[in-house]
Image 1 (spheres, protein in one colour):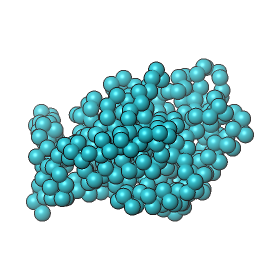
Image 2 (cartoon, rainbow, N blue to C red):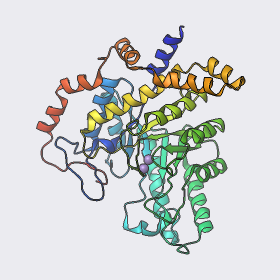
Image 3 (cartoon, rainbow, N blue to C red):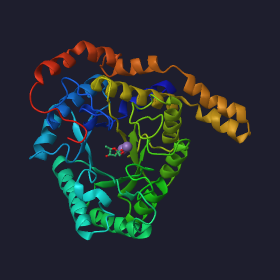
Image 4 (cartoon, protein in one colour):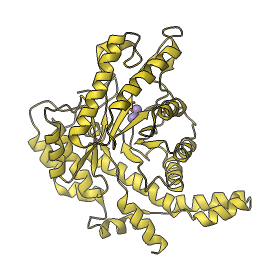
Length: 386
Ligand code: LRH
Ligand code: MN
Ligand code: MN
């Protein structure tokens, strides 16, 4: 295989998971701008996700968030997905939207609240059994706002105990992905604030526990590709929640704020063998003012562009320059790949996959946007937090 053919082959097998919540209405804490045609049910979110897959060819799975996507029959929801050429992906738990969780969920000082939170996590594993989902994605809003509010170490013990119980419930081919976030909604301490804390818990739990890197969850200036390289090296990178940010957890389209950072991350993924392994490439975004389906299509394309550039890095030339201590030469190898216009290559990839080379235009021409605006009237539109 020529090098170009190998790059194309890798791009054809890449899969990006889209989040059910990105299809629904969302906003900031100031205002949710409702858009017309937005899904009213989890099934309609899957119908929209099927369009993203139809036009990109690389978005075959959809992550659910429980209870936002609560249904009576999860096996039937999985069949709804299959009928549209999709599969259900990670099951995201939600222990942050209940009055009982004011002081935390699995780290709460009251054992009864911790029990309720753990039961929800166990229920999420039941849902995975029904949907065939492989990954349970955990993010905890737990933390404290004031020094002295609670015992930092006791909260870690409670967290470890809860995680161990849920870990014990996982099937052989199921994984637990633990997501960290520096701050928000807690502002003094967060119980899983960084990759080190997540890694320490995952290490103790065992091989089925891995860390999730949400690209919007770090302090400004954090070198995320270093974290990615380290976790991959340790066999503990479970996946990504991709999005981009200018300030905090902005949840904007991945690759929109800093395509160079996304390239650097994807280079470490390629370098560490993460593209062909079991790393889950998920989006975690909210489209507050822009049209949702095209924004998700664009995001998938942004991931593809960064991946293509990462695959184009001349690794032999890079290694040679690094061995020789040629600082500028090594940097130039990386920058050459980043500066390559990979859009023609991706158009070829899509044509070879039987797709329209321009997914944005193809979606716009498809009439789907007009159809959902006309048909999805009445009922309540699903949204972030619905
Ligand atoms: C938390 C988070 C986490 C949640 C999602 C809705 O900020 O990134 O992944 O599940 O947002
Ligand atoms: Mn996330
Ligand atoms: Mn987030």
